[in-house]
Length: 176
Image 1 (cartoon, helix red, strand yellow):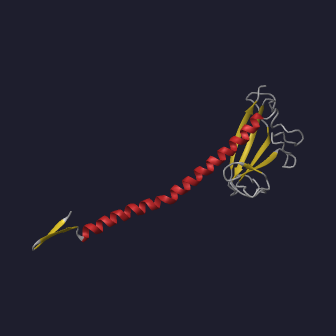
Image 2 (cartoon, rainbow, N blue to C red):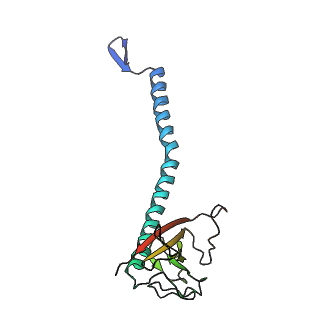
């Protein structure tokens, strides 16, 4: 509320000290509340970006596996048949690692731009419910693990041991 003071010959209008103090307190409360939300928003933004890059990496791996000549994931004697012509025996018999930069684009193992490591397990049996054979010839299952790390020798330890990575499962079916 504006107050006016009468002096002989002129009128002075303005806010009282109490009104100014209340307005500053309300503005400070609003600013502090917004600043308190800032770290939460930044963390959510970081997680969303990481999820987007993981999805991009996963999409690339699945697309390459689905477009590969069949059988794509049935290695013979530990040799992988992934379309990138990788040697599964050198990578642990069916386990193959790929490396990606901070934008989710695949890079070489000796690149300085590695930000993500993806490990693909090709040796997963897959059978239809009620099937008598443990491994169907037209089905393949991929287990893909993606870690946000720049280390080329990152070990994907069993989950729950404090190491952070995301595991995806994908089923590929080929009828021709």
